[in-house]
Length: 333
Image 1 (spheres, helix red, strand yellow):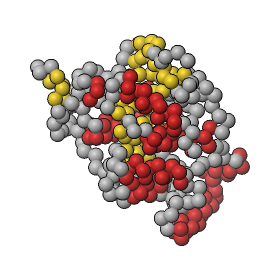
Image 2: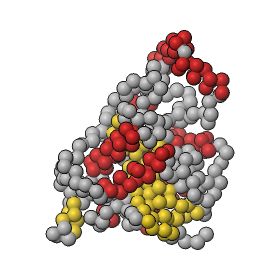
Image 3: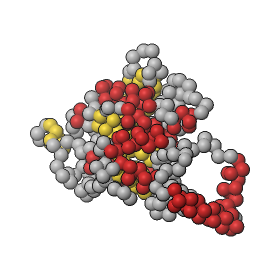
Image 4: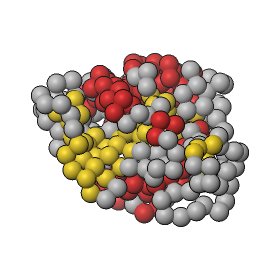
């Protein structure tokens, strides 16, 4: 395999190639404005969500990577082996592979290369749905990982595909008045079973993934968790009868953790609708500024200075007039 190298440059983006442990990986580098020394910055790496290419649903990852770079943080969207433009072959049981941490080693290797090539102080891993699983596994295995951004993370072992009969029953329950009544009754039966079990995770919980979460969160790694409302869910709680993983993992992280968990009303699971994209961008900007503040670049002095509290942030297109909101760790919510 030839040495990884830049292959193309268009505007503020460059196509890059990386070594995926013997497999050629392709990705996109979103350059940040050069207002401070690059080595003072962390980068943000997007990983694939299941089999989606690095652009994600509705090019949402492209939108967020451009925005994050404009905030001052270089961003990278890299296709993992067998996905998107990268070489290699995806396994037929891709979901099981991801849930077992199959991309851990290659994702950690990508993080190390990005830090070395772009002189970064570290990398924040960004994952959505199944991508959040890969991001968490890689974050626990990578000494260069400085934080996690997880959209609709899950901590159970889902089926790759729901049985056709169950899909048909679910559709009928949503359309039919009788079906909705029966579905609600079923939820309440499940809620009684949930109360009987207490705060213990259900049998299909991904114990290995929960252990990796506790490892990084209890050590104080900053993490931003964003959840979209599910079917029949109200507010920040899951539907009746479902185990509250968000509450559980925030508690599991411990009192010294730096976990910010937010519920994004108006978003769908992909977060690719306009409301979802804008809210994710807003949360990420505030979280990055609170946890990874950039040195303020003084044009007259010609170098970077230490950041000041509530400093006004500049991005590539505008000057933000409001102070950056503070994000506080949530404990036991």
